[in-house]
Image (cartoon, rainbow, N blue to C red; front, side, top):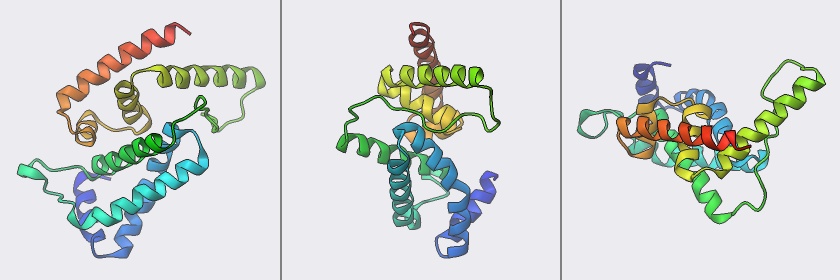
Length: 183
């Protein structure tokens, strides 16, 4: 979906249930996937996704597609910011007591048992590395790679400049690389 199509759809969704349904159908799987990667629990991810879209509905009439100062605000960034804040609130209320586990396989095709074991081990290493990193680095890597956001969208979601987002991504990747090598 182009930014122009998104802007037009968001404006229509403020008063048209059909347009809102289109927005929901387009973004729900992406937001659910992003949240599920962050919390690692299917039920919690479903609840947090619902909370995210509820907050979106409550605040959509005030969403300004023109943005402050004419810069424009990406709806996608705004929605991911809501999702990120919802996850942060969840962790503030529910401090995790055990390591986050990944339940969904990364591949759709059926690998042989050796490939499956290697894949599971690699995924465990990635998730363990992310869980041991500073929160600001873990969050930005989740947005970049699990949320599939551009640097500009990440900047808008976190309230920082695109250059700062790029620097943080670079530093986060270097930190990830060092942490990952230690496993």
